[in-house]
Image 1 (cartoon, rainbow, N blue to C red):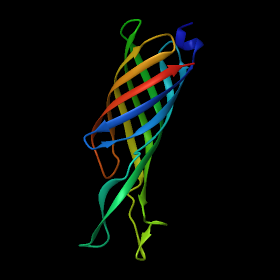
Image 2 (image 1 turned 90 degrees about the vertical axis):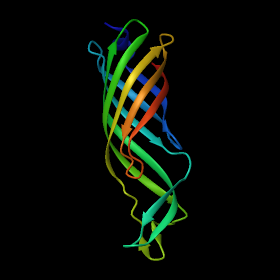
Image 3 (image 1 turned 180 degrees about the horizontal axis):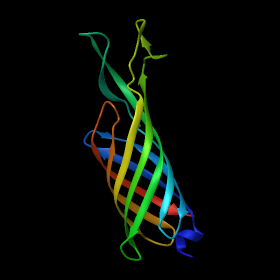
Image 4 (image 1 turned 30 degrees about the horizontal axis):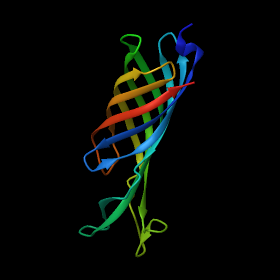
Length: 163
C-alpha cells in the first residue's frame, strides 16, 4: 500500500492570479485509486475584492459595477511522481461561476435585471508539486478558468496538507 493509500484526504489553500485579478479558495481531494494516484476534488474560490466591470443594460447603455465572482467546481486530479519529493499534476473540473454586484440589491437596477453572466466553466490546473514533509506540500502551475467577464490563463499557487 502506498502512502496515499494510507492518507487518502488532502486539503489545500489556493490562489489563482493574473495582473490586477486574483482569487483565494480551497480544494479538498480524496484519493480514489492510491496505486494510480488518482483523486476526486471539490473546490471553491472567489475574488476577495470588487473588480470594476461594465454590464450592458440595453443596446447602448453600460453601467460600471464592482463584481465579486465565485467558482464552485468538482472533478478529477492525477499525480505523476517524478521522485520522492516532486510530482507533476493535472486537474480537470467542471465548475459553476456566479457573481454578486455590490450595491445592486436584488440583482436589479432602476427596474432592469442585471445580467450576471453566471454559467458552467472548465477549471483546469496543471503544474508541479513539492512535498516538504509527509504531510505538507506546495503546488504551483497554471490554471484555465472562464470567469465570463475575465477569461484566460492564471498562475496557480497552493499550500496544502495530507491527512
